[in-house]
Image 1 (cartoon, one colour):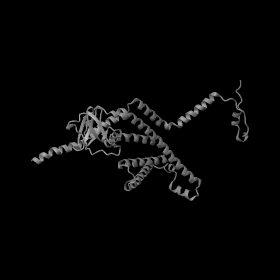
Image 2 (cartoon, rainbow, N blue to C red):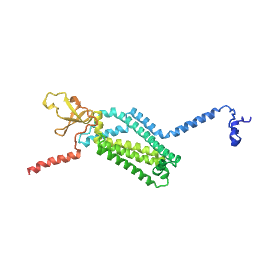
Image 3 (cartoon, rainbow, N blue to C red):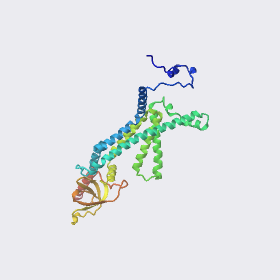
Image 4 (cartoon, rainbow, N blue to C red):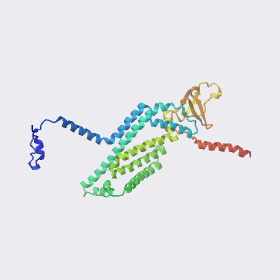
Length: 353
C-alpha cells in the first residue's frame, strides 16, 4: 500500500514563486509519536537553557538535605573555630561542647548555602544586565550614526567585546583591575572623610572591596561574555571562603557568639545557688566569654583573669542587650599573655638586685 499523500510536504519542495500563500491544504491527522518527540525536544531545549541555574538548585537541595541530616562541613568548622577562638584568648577550649552548635549550626548551614545560591543567581543576572545595556548602547550608535550624542558614545563607549577581541588577554584583565581600583578609590575617598555612614570601618572596607571586585568581574564579562558562568562560580567560591575566614577570626567569631547569646564578651551578672557567703558574691563586672555544656567561662575586668564556674552552681544569669554593635573588651592573645607574665616575673628580681 503506498504511503498517504501529504500536500504540505509537496508544497515545501516547490519553488517560492510557485507556492500559493493563501492556499489552505488540509493536513492529515497528527502522528502521536511525532507529537511526543516534539514535546520531548522542547523539554530538552528548556532543560539545556536552564543548565546555568542547576548549581543554585543543587545548593538549595543540598542545604535542605544538610539541615535534615544535622551534620555538615560548616558544623565541623564551627566546632574547631570555637576551639581556635578560645585558644587565641588563652581560655580552656570547651572540648565538652557548646549547646548552640548542635541546635543552630543546621540553620546557619541552611542560610549559608541558600545565600550562596542567591549570590550565584544574582551574579549571573547582574552580568547579563550589564551585557544587555552594553549591546543596547551599541545598537543605538548604529541606529543613529549621524546624531551628536551617539557619535560621542561611539568615541567613549565602543563595543567592548569587539574592541578586545584581537587584543592580548592580559590587556582585558589590566583594564578590569583598573576599573575595580578606580571604583574602590572613589568609594574610599567619599565614605571615610565625609563620614557618610555609621557602619564600622572594617565592615565598610570589606563591602567596598567586594563591590570593587564585582565591578572588575563585570568588566570582564563585557569583553568576554562566555566567562559569565565561570565568574559566577568564582564569586560563590569567594563568598564561601570569606565565611571560613570569618569563622576563624576571633573578633568576628565573637560577633556570632554574642548574636546567639553564648559568649563573645557579653556583660553579665551571675547569681550563684549558694550566695550567702561573701566568697560567692559576684557583683563585679564580668563578661561571658564562652558558655559550654558544663561551665560558664567569664572574664573579670578588674583583675583581667578568667573565671570558670560550673553550670550546676549558677542560679541565674543576667545580661544586657549587646548585639553586633557591642565591642569585646581588650583581650591579649596567648602570646601576649605569656610575654606579659614573663615581664611580671622578671620585674621583682630586677628591683631586688
